[in-house]
Image (tube, rainbow, N blue to C red; front, side, top):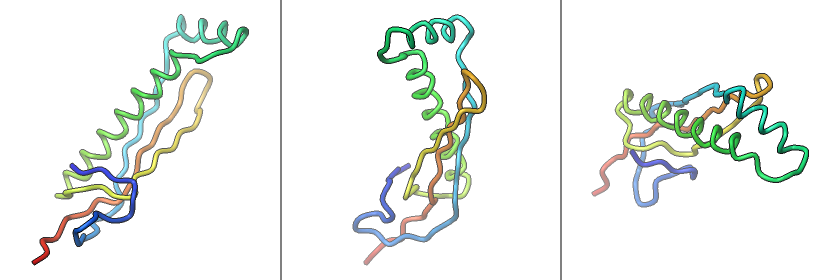
Length: 106
């Protein structure tokens, strides 16, 4: 599956199949959440949350690709990611884009 964050596939004609998305709400365990709180006292990257968001983006992207494959898509264009905090220590991540079928050009 070709994934692009531009609105076309260079050198190809496309047929839009529709919007596809994947979403996940991810949280860290209490121990890591406690250590993250301690890290805010001294500053620096909170690696537990970085890892959580990387994993959440991967899951959301996979779910988006699965939805596109179910439509028979060859690619997803104009991909975007969004995130929001749904509660302390948990974040929602969404990946969305337009599923397209590549047309052969002669």
